[in-house]
Image 1: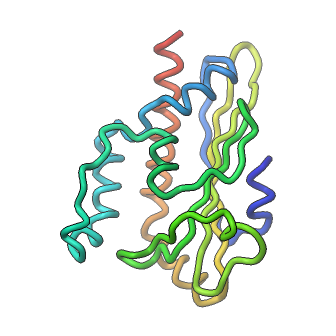
Image 2: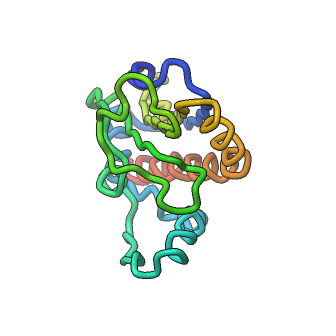
Length: 186
């Protein structure tokens, strides 16, 4: 998988998958078109994550997107690191995620080459499709995080203890949104 080339030895890994009654092609198309943040739970969790930034920088409040798609995520800070059309897309974001605000670096593909800089963590996130037979597809998402040093690893792991269940829930809801889009279109 492409994600392996960006984080072969991650500090943290989280994987989720869902089986969908549709072809790989249909699932991959829906992945790009589906509203991944339609759920009220996702909207509330994302708003909660952004709350410290709004409180510390009231002028930064801007109109929130009505729809969250992969394209919107890429425009909003994640960068597309690699893609094998129809099979896998790999996104990346870097920063100091454990900070309440000012925690994301502007996307730069160079931040994902070589070793992770001290004080920084890289998050690499993919979506991949795999044929499951009989017109069924497995859609999976994997998140890998690589920290630049022991201090950032400690801070990230403390942050991850709190955030992990909610992060996983968001990814599961996103997978279900793609499944719903595919199966309702069939």
